[in-house]
Length: 53
Image (tube, rainbow, N blue to C red; front, side, top):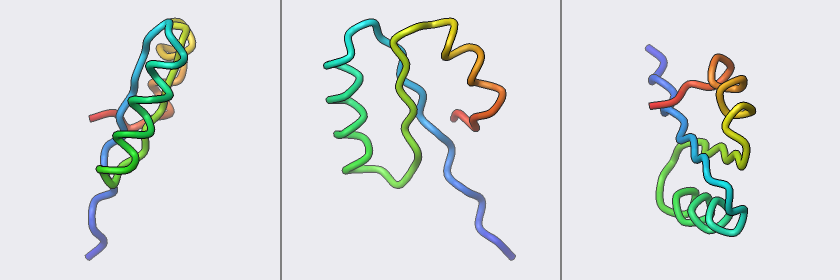
């Protein structure tokens, strides 16, 4: 039986420095993919290809 892959975290904020910092903190402390976006429409377009939790 294969374990279920972890859900992804999706961060959306117009401040790149904020998304970079949060992405680094989450990646260092959690075992799941972190995807960051500074443009909401790009995030919405990417959601069907990600597995957010």
